[in-house]
Length: 420
Ligand code: GLU
Image (cartoon, rainbow, N blue to C red; front, side, top):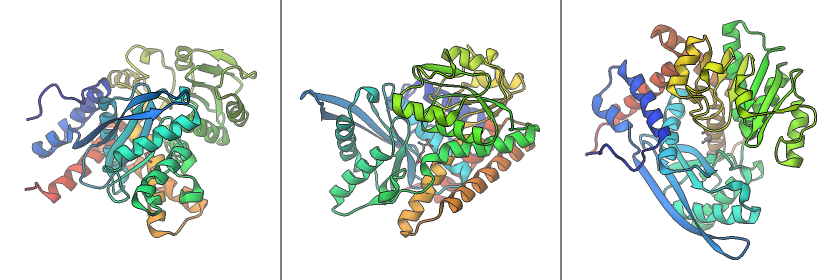
Protein backbone atom coordinates (compact mmCIF):
# COMPACT_ATOMS: atom_id res chain seq x y z
CA UNK A 1 0.00 0.00 0.00
CA UNK A 2 1.31 3.46 -0.81
CA UNK A 3 1.82 5.20 2.52
CA UNK A 4 0.82 8.72 3.41
CA UNK A 5 4.38 9.97 3.49
CA UNK A 6 5.96 9.15 0.18
CA UNK A 7 9.46 9.84 -1.13
CA UNK A 8 8.12 12.10 -3.88
CA UNK A 9 6.28 14.48 -1.55
CA UNK A 10 6.82 18.18 -2.42
CA UNK A 11 4.78 21.40 -2.50
CA UNK A 12 4.44 21.20 -6.28
CA UNK A 13 3.42 17.55 -6.11
CA UNK A 14 0.77 18.44 -3.53
CA UNK A 15 -0.54 21.18 -5.76
CA UNK A 16 -0.68 18.96 -8.83
CA UNK A 17 -2.47 16.24 -6.86
CA UNK A 18 -4.96 18.77 -5.52
CA UNK A 19 -5.70 19.89 -9.08
CA UNK A 20 -6.08 16.26 -10.05
CA UNK A 21 -8.41 15.51 -7.12
CA UNK A 22 -10.56 18.50 -7.97
CA UNK A 23 -10.84 17.46 -11.60
CA UNK A 24 -11.70 13.80 -10.91
CA UNK A 25 -14.23 14.73 -8.21
CA UNK A 26 -16.76 15.56 -10.88
CA UNK A 27 -15.98 12.69 -13.26
CA UNK A 28 -17.31 9.19 -12.91
CA UNK A 29 -14.12 7.18 -13.15
CA UNK A 30 -12.84 3.81 -11.99
CA UNK A 31 -11.48 4.60 -8.50
CA UNK A 32 -8.70 2.01 -8.84
CA UNK A 33 -7.32 3.73 -11.92
CA UNK A 34 -7.74 7.17 -10.38
CA UNK A 35 -5.77 6.09 -7.31
CA UNK A 36 -3.03 4.66 -9.49
CA UNK A 37 -2.62 7.94 -11.37
CA UNK A 38 -1.80 9.88 -8.19
CA UNK A 39 1.61 8.22 -8.03
CA UNK A 40 4.65 8.01 -10.29
CA UNK A 41 4.93 4.57 -11.89
CA UNK A 42 8.70 4.48 -12.24
CA UNK A 43 11.39 6.75 -10.79
CA UNK A 44 15.14 6.64 -11.01
CA UNK A 45 17.43 8.55 -8.65
CA UNK A 46 21.07 8.72 -9.63
CA UNK A 47 24.12 10.29 -8.07
CA UNK A 48 27.15 10.73 -10.24
CA UNK A 49 30.58 12.35 -10.20
CA UNK A 50 31.67 15.17 -12.48
CA UNK A 51 35.22 16.45 -12.77
CA UNK A 52 35.08 20.22 -12.38
CA UNK A 53 37.44 22.62 -14.15
CA UNK A 54 39.45 23.10 -10.95
CA UNK A 55 40.35 19.40 -11.00
CA UNK A 56 38.06 18.46 -8.11
CA UNK A 57 35.24 15.96 -8.36
CA UNK A 58 31.71 16.98 -7.37
CA UNK A 59 28.79 14.62 -6.91
CA UNK A 60 25.42 15.56 -8.40
CA UNK A 61 21.94 14.14 -7.90
CA UNK A 62 19.73 13.49 -10.92
CA UNK A 63 16.30 12.02 -11.60
CA UNK A 64 14.09 10.58 -14.31
CA UNK A 65 10.45 9.94 -13.48
CA UNK A 66 7.90 8.25 -15.74
CA UNK A 67 4.51 9.06 -14.36
CA UNK A 68 2.52 6.43 -16.19
CA UNK A 69 3.55 3.90 -18.81
CA UNK A 70 0.34 3.37 -20.74
CA UNK A 71 2.14 4.98 -23.70
CA UNK A 72 5.83 5.68 -24.39
CA UNK A 73 6.79 8.61 -22.18
CA UNK A 74 7.96 12.08 -23.04
CA UNK A 75 9.17 15.13 -21.16
CA UNK A 76 12.00 17.55 -20.62
CA UNK A 77 15.21 17.58 -18.59
CA UNK A 78 15.65 20.45 -16.15
CA UNK A 79 18.88 21.77 -14.63
CA UNK A 80 18.12 23.85 -11.56
CA UNK A 81 19.06 24.26 -7.90
CA UNK A 82 15.55 23.35 -6.77
CA UNK A 83 15.23 20.08 -8.67
CA UNK A 84 14.07 17.29 -6.35
CA UNK A 85 12.34 13.96 -6.82
CA UNK A 86 9.08 15.60 -5.69
CA UNK A 87 9.28 18.45 -8.14
CA UNK A 88 10.20 16.18 -11.07
CA UNK A 89 7.35 13.81 -10.16
CA UNK A 90 4.83 16.66 -10.22
CA UNK A 91 6.13 17.87 -13.57
CA UNK A 92 5.99 14.33 -15.01
CA UNK A 93 2.34 14.12 -13.95
CA UNK A 94 1.59 17.44 -15.66
CA UNK A 95 3.24 16.07 -18.81
CA UNK A 96 0.82 13.13 -18.78
CA UNK A 97 -2.22 15.41 -18.78
CA UNK A 98 -0.60 17.74 -21.32
CA UNK A 99 0.14 14.99 -23.84
CA UNK A 100 -3.30 13.41 -23.37
CA UNK A 101 -5.11 16.74 -23.69
CA UNK A 102 -3.33 17.43 -26.97
CA UNK A 103 -3.85 13.88 -28.22
CA UNK A 104 -0.16 12.96 -28.52
CA UNK A 105 0.76 9.26 -28.28
CA UNK A 106 2.77 9.78 -25.08
CA UNK A 107 2.43 9.61 -21.33
CA UNK A 108 4.39 12.00 -19.14
CA UNK A 109 7.95 11.91 -17.87
CA UNK A 110 10.41 14.47 -16.58
CA UNK A 111 14.03 14.49 -15.56
CA UNK A 112 16.53 16.81 -14.02
CA UNK A 113 19.76 17.41 -12.23
CA UNK A 114 20.06 19.53 -9.12
CA UNK A 115 22.75 22.05 -9.96
CA UNK A 116 23.28 25.74 -10.53
CA UNK A 117 23.75 25.90 -14.30
CA UNK A 118 24.91 29.52 -14.09
CA UNK A 119 27.99 28.40 -12.22
CA UNK A 120 28.96 25.66 -14.67
CA UNK A 121 31.39 26.24 -17.52
CA UNK A 122 30.52 24.79 -20.95
CA UNK A 123 33.00 21.97 -20.37
CA UNK A 124 31.47 21.15 -16.98
CA UNK A 125 27.97 21.29 -18.45
CA UNK A 126 29.03 18.81 -21.13
CA UNK A 127 30.61 16.37 -18.65
CA UNK A 128 27.58 16.63 -16.36
CA UNK A 129 25.18 16.02 -19.24
CA UNK A 130 27.10 13.05 -20.61
CA UNK A 131 27.42 11.34 -17.26
CA UNK A 132 23.79 11.99 -16.33
CA UNK A 133 22.72 10.56 -19.71
CA UNK A 134 24.87 7.47 -19.16
CA UNK A 135 23.27 7.00 -15.74
CA UNK A 136 19.71 7.16 -17.09
CA UNK A 137 20.39 5.22 -20.31
CA UNK A 138 18.51 2.19 -18.99
CA UNK A 139 15.41 4.33 -18.60
CA UNK A 140 15.30 6.21 -21.93
CA UNK A 141 15.04 5.14 -25.57
CA UNK A 142 13.36 6.14 -28.82
CA UNK A 143 10.40 3.87 -28.25
CA UNK A 144 10.26 4.01 -24.46
CA UNK A 145 11.05 7.47 -23.09
CA UNK A 146 12.19 10.49 -25.09
CA UNK A 147 13.76 13.46 -23.25
CA UNK A 148 13.72 17.07 -24.47
CA UNK A 149 14.84 20.51 -23.30
CA UNK A 150 13.36 22.26 -20.28
CA UNK A 151 14.67 24.95 -17.91
CA UNK A 152 18.40 25.57 -18.53
CA UNK A 153 18.81 22.79 -21.07
CA UNK A 154 19.00 23.55 -24.78
CA UNK A 155 19.85 22.19 -28.23
CA UNK A 156 23.50 21.69 -27.31
CA UNK A 157 22.58 19.68 -24.20
CA UNK A 158 20.27 17.52 -26.36
CA UNK A 159 23.11 17.00 -28.86
CA UNK A 160 25.38 15.73 -26.05
CA UNK A 161 22.62 13.46 -24.79
CA UNK A 162 22.01 12.07 -28.26
CA UNK A 163 25.75 11.55 -28.78
CA UNK A 164 26.25 9.83 -25.41
CA UNK A 165 23.30 7.50 -25.95
CA UNK A 166 24.41 6.75 -29.52
CA UNK A 167 27.99 5.98 -28.41
CA UNK A 168 26.61 3.35 -26.07
CA UNK A 169 24.41 1.80 -28.75
CA UNK A 170 27.17 1.85 -31.36
CA UNK A 171 25.16 3.77 -33.96
CA UNK A 172 23.43 7.13 -34.28
CA UNK A 173 20.03 7.26 -32.55
CA UNK A 174 18.72 10.78 -33.23
CA UNK A 175 15.17 9.90 -32.22
CA UNK A 176 16.14 9.28 -28.57
CA UNK A 177 15.79 13.00 -27.76
CA UNK A 178 13.93 15.93 -29.29
CA UNK A 179 14.87 19.58 -29.35
CA UNK A 180 18.19 18.68 -31.04
CA UNK A 181 20.06 20.92 -33.47
CA UNK A 182 18.68 20.60 -37.01
CA UNK A 183 22.08 19.32 -38.22
CA UNK A 184 21.59 16.03 -36.34
CA UNK A 185 17.90 15.44 -36.97
CA UNK A 186 16.26 18.25 -35.02
CA UNK A 187 13.06 19.81 -36.32
CA UNK A 188 12.66 23.22 -37.82
CA UNK A 189 10.63 25.42 -35.51
CA UNK A 190 11.26 23.39 -32.35
CA UNK A 191 13.25 26.15 -30.68
CA UNK A 192 10.40 28.63 -31.11
CA UNK A 193 7.59 26.11 -30.62
CA UNK A 194 6.59 26.74 -27.00
CA UNK A 195 6.51 30.54 -27.31
CA UNK A 196 4.79 30.35 -30.66
CA UNK A 197 2.21 28.00 -29.16
CA UNK A 198 1.59 30.36 -26.22
CA UNK A 199 0.78 33.08 -28.73
CA UNK A 200 -1.53 30.84 -30.82
CA UNK A 201 -3.48 30.06 -27.65
CA UNK A 202 -3.55 33.74 -26.63
CA UNK A 203 -4.85 34.60 -30.11
CA UNK A 204 -7.80 32.21 -29.71
CA UNK A 205 -8.54 33.54 -26.22
CA UNK A 206 -8.35 37.15 -27.43
CA UNK A 207 -11.01 36.36 -30.06
CA UNK A 208 -13.20 35.02 -27.31
CA UNK A 209 -12.74 38.11 -25.16
CA UNK A 210 -13.05 40.50 -28.07
CA UNK A 211 -9.56 41.75 -27.24
CA UNK A 212 -7.63 43.43 -30.00
CA UNK A 213 -4.04 42.19 -29.82
CA UNK A 214 -2.87 45.20 -31.74
CA UNK A 215 -1.83 47.60 -29.00
CA UNK A 216 -2.65 45.16 -26.16
CA UNK A 217 -0.20 45.51 -23.26
CA UNK A 218 1.74 42.36 -22.37
CA UNK A 219 3.92 41.58 -19.35
CA UNK A 220 6.19 38.55 -19.37
CA UNK A 221 7.93 36.97 -16.40
CA UNK A 222 10.99 35.04 -17.60
CA UNK A 223 13.17 35.67 -20.61
CA UNK A 224 14.48 32.21 -21.39
CA UNK A 225 13.37 30.20 -24.40
CA UNK A 226 9.65 30.47 -23.64
CA UNK A 227 9.53 34.06 -22.37
CA UNK A 228 11.72 35.59 -25.06
CA UNK A 229 9.98 33.88 -27.98
CA UNK A 230 6.54 34.66 -26.54
CA UNK A 231 7.57 38.32 -26.23
CA UNK A 232 8.89 38.33 -29.79
CA UNK A 233 5.77 36.72 -31.25
CA UNK A 234 3.43 38.99 -29.26
CA UNK A 235 5.33 42.05 -30.50
CA UNK A 236 4.97 40.70 -34.04
CA UNK A 237 1.20 40.56 -33.52
CA UNK A 238 1.24 44.24 -32.59
CA UNK A 239 1.17 43.85 -28.80
CA UNK A 240 3.06 46.32 -26.66
CA UNK A 241 5.42 44.30 -24.48
CA UNK A 242 5.72 46.73 -21.58
CA UNK A 243 7.69 44.58 -19.11
CA UNK A 244 9.87 41.48 -19.00
CA UNK A 245 12.09 39.91 -16.33
CA UNK A 246 14.74 37.28 -15.70
CA UNK A 247 16.28 35.92 -12.50
CA UNK A 248 18.14 39.18 -11.83
CA UNK A 249 15.08 41.45 -12.10
CA UNK A 250 12.72 43.16 -14.53
CA UNK A 251 12.55 45.94 -17.10
CA UNK A 252 9.67 48.27 -17.76
CA UNK A 253 8.90 50.66 -20.58
CA UNK A 254 5.29 51.90 -20.82
CA UNK A 255 5.79 52.70 -24.51
CA UNK A 256 6.71 49.10 -25.25
CA UNK A 257 10.08 47.36 -25.34
CA UNK A 258 11.97 46.61 -28.55
CA UNK A 259 11.98 42.82 -28.07
CA UNK A 260 14.42 42.01 -30.89
CA UNK A 261 16.88 44.51 -29.47
CA UNK A 262 16.42 43.01 -26.00
CA UNK A 263 17.11 39.50 -27.31
CA UNK A 264 20.33 40.78 -28.88
CA UNK A 265 21.23 42.56 -25.64
CA UNK A 266 20.78 39.32 -23.68
CA UNK A 267 22.88 37.39 -26.22
CA UNK A 268 25.74 39.77 -25.44
CA UNK A 269 25.18 40.44 -21.74
CA UNK A 270 23.53 37.18 -20.60
CA UNK A 271 20.97 39.06 -18.48
CA UNK A 272 18.45 41.89 -19.01
CA UNK A 273 20.08 44.00 -16.33
CA UNK A 274 21.56 47.26 -17.57
CA UNK A 275 19.46 47.48 -20.74
CA UNK A 276 19.31 51.24 -21.35
CA UNK A 277 15.89 51.75 -23.00
CA UNK A 278 13.84 50.75 -19.92
CA UNK A 279 13.49 51.26 -16.18
CA UNK A 280 14.51 48.46 -13.83
CA UNK A 281 11.65 46.99 -11.78
CA UNK A 282 11.39 44.20 -9.21
CA UNK A 283 9.59 40.89 -9.70
CA UNK A 284 6.81 42.07 -7.37
CA UNK A 285 6.32 45.27 -9.33
CA UNK A 286 6.21 43.36 -12.59
CA UNK A 287 3.25 41.28 -11.44
CA UNK A 288 1.36 44.37 -10.30
CA UNK A 289 1.57 46.26 -13.59
CA UNK A 290 -1.83 46.88 -15.18
CA UNK A 291 -1.83 44.98 -18.48
CA UNK A 292 -4.03 42.98 -20.84
CA UNK A 293 -1.92 39.83 -21.01
CA UNK A 294 0.31 38.44 -18.27
CA UNK A 295 2.58 35.52 -19.14
CA UNK A 296 4.40 33.74 -16.33
CA UNK A 297 7.16 31.93 -18.23
CA UNK A 298 9.61 31.03 -15.49
CA UNK A 299 9.26 28.72 -12.50
CA UNK A 300 6.30 27.14 -10.71
CA UNK A 301 4.50 28.66 -7.72
CA UNK A 302 4.91 32.30 -8.77
CA UNK A 303 1.29 33.45 -8.51
CA UNK A 304 -0.03 32.66 -5.06
CA UNK A 305 -2.64 33.99 -2.64
CA UNK A 306 0.03 36.52 -1.60
CA UNK A 307 0.21 38.39 -4.90
CA UNK A 308 -2.90 37.30 -6.83
CA UNK A 309 -5.03 40.14 -5.50
CA UNK A 310 -2.58 42.69 -6.85
CA UNK A 311 -2.51 41.19 -10.32
CA UNK A 312 -4.19 43.40 -12.84
CA UNK A 313 -4.58 41.63 -16.20
CA UNK A 314 -7.41 40.27 -18.37
CA UNK A 315 -5.68 37.18 -19.62
CA UNK A 316 -3.20 35.00 -17.75
CA UNK A 317 -1.33 32.77 -20.17
CA UNK A 318 0.69 30.13 -18.33
CA UNK A 319 3.93 29.64 -20.26
CA UNK A 320 5.57 27.92 -17.28
CA UNK A 321 4.50 24.63 -15.68
CA UNK A 322 2.47 25.12 -12.50
CA UNK A 323 3.00 28.89 -12.11
CA UNK A 324 -0.25 29.50 -10.17
CA UNK A 325 -1.59 27.87 -7.03
CA UNK A 326 -5.23 26.79 -6.73
CA UNK A 327 -5.89 29.63 -4.26
CA UNK A 328 -4.49 32.18 -6.71
CA UNK A 329 -6.60 30.62 -9.46
CA UNK A 330 -9.75 31.30 -7.49
CA UNK A 331 -8.78 34.88 -6.61
CA UNK A 332 -7.99 35.67 -10.23
CA UNK A 333 -11.17 34.09 -11.55
CA UNK A 334 -13.19 36.11 -9.05
CA UNK A 335 -11.54 39.18 -10.52
CA UNK A 336 -12.67 38.11 -13.97
CA UNK A 337 -9.28 37.03 -15.32
CA UNK A 338 -9.34 34.33 -18.00
CA UNK A 339 -6.65 31.76 -17.18
CA UNK A 340 -5.10 29.74 -19.98
CA UNK A 341 -3.77 26.71 -18.09
CA UNK A 342 -0.19 25.48 -18.47
CA UNK A 343 -1.05 22.08 -19.97
CA UNK A 344 -2.80 23.84 -22.85
CA UNK A 345 -0.88 27.08 -23.10
CA UNK A 346 2.68 25.75 -23.11
CA UNK A 347 2.02 22.53 -25.05
CA UNK A 348 3.59 23.89 -28.26
CA UNK A 349 7.00 22.58 -27.21
CA UNK A 350 5.97 18.98 -26.80
CA UNK A 351 3.81 19.14 -29.94
CA UNK A 352 6.78 20.06 -32.12
CA UNK A 353 8.87 17.54 -30.17
CA UNK A 354 6.34 14.97 -31.32
CA UNK A 355 6.76 16.25 -34.90
CA UNK A 356 10.53 15.92 -34.50
CA UNK A 357 10.25 12.34 -33.27
CA UNK A 358 7.92 11.42 -36.14
CA UNK A 359 10.26 13.02 -38.69
CA UNK A 360 13.27 11.18 -37.21
CA UNK A 361 11.47 7.84 -37.27
CA UNK A 362 10.48 8.36 -40.89
CA UNK A 363 13.72 10.06 -41.92
CA UNK A 364 11.54 12.50 -43.79
CA UNK A 365 11.58 16.17 -42.85
CA UNK A 366 8.88 18.79 -43.09
CA UNK A 367 9.05 22.47 -43.98
CA UNK A 368 8.75 25.18 -41.36
CA UNK A 369 5.45 26.20 -42.85
CA UNK A 370 4.04 22.69 -42.48
CA UNK A 371 5.26 22.54 -38.90
CA UNK A 372 3.81 25.88 -37.85
CA UNK A 373 0.50 25.22 -39.60
CA UNK A 374 0.14 21.82 -37.93
CA UNK A 375 1.12 23.30 -34.57
CA UNK A 376 -1.47 26.02 -34.92
CA UNK A 377 -4.17 23.60 -36.02
CA UNK A 378 -3.57 21.26 -33.08
CA UNK A 379 -3.49 24.05 -30.50
CA UNK A 380 -6.55 25.79 -31.89
CA UNK A 381 -8.48 22.52 -31.77
CA UNK A 382 -7.30 21.86 -28.22
CA UNK A 383 -8.28 25.37 -27.15
CA UNK A 384 -11.78 24.92 -28.59
CA UNK A 385 -12.18 21.50 -26.96
CA UNK A 386 -11.19 22.94 -23.60
CA UNK A 387 -13.44 25.93 -24.01
CA UNK A 388 -16.43 23.79 -25.03
CA UNK A 389 -15.85 21.40 -22.14
CA UNK A 390 -15.60 24.29 -19.66
CA UNK A 391 -18.85 25.67 -21.02
CA UNK A 392 -20.61 22.31 -20.91
CA UNK A 393 -19.44 21.43 -17.40
CA UNK A 394 -19.76 25.01 -16.14
CA UNK A 395 -16.18 24.99 -14.96
CA UNK A 396 -12.98 26.89 -15.67
CA UNK A 397 -10.45 26.24 -18.42
CA UNK A 398 -7.94 24.50 -16.10
CA UNK A 399 -10.46 22.00 -14.80
CA UNK A 400 -11.79 21.41 -18.30
CA UNK A 401 -8.29 20.81 -19.67
CA UNK A 402 -7.49 18.42 -16.83
CA UNK A 403 -10.78 16.59 -17.27
CA UNK A 404 -10.10 15.98 -20.95
CA UNK A 405 -6.52 14.86 -20.33
CA UNK A 406 -7.28 12.67 -17.32
CA UNK A 407 -10.34 11.16 -19.03
CA UNK A 408 -8.22 10.01 -21.96
CA UNK A 409 -5.53 8.48 -19.76
CA UNK A 410 -8.10 6.65 -17.67
CA UNK A 411 -9.69 5.26 -20.82
CA UNK A 412 -6.30 4.05 -22.10
CA UNK A 413 -5.66 2.34 -18.78
CA UNK A 414 -9.14 0.82 -18.68
CA UNK A 415 -8.90 -0.66 -22.14
CA UNK A 416 -5.42 -2.11 -21.51
CA UNK A 417 -6.69 -3.74 -18.35
CA UNK A 418 -4.78 -4.78 -15.27
CA UNK A 419 -1.74 -7.05 -15.47
CA UNK A 420 -1.56 -9.81 -14.28
N1 GLU B 1 9.90 20.62 -21.45
C1 GLU B 1 8.80 20.88 -22.31
C2 GLU B 1 7.50 20.69 -21.56
O1 GLU B 1 7.51 20.66 -20.37
C3 GLU B 1 8.87 20.08 -23.58
C4 GLU B 1 8.84 18.60 -23.42
C5 GLU B 1 9.08 17.86 -24.73
O2 GLU B 1 9.27 18.51 -25.74
O3 GLU B 1 9.09 16.64 -24.67
O4 GLU B 1 6.45 20.63 -22.11
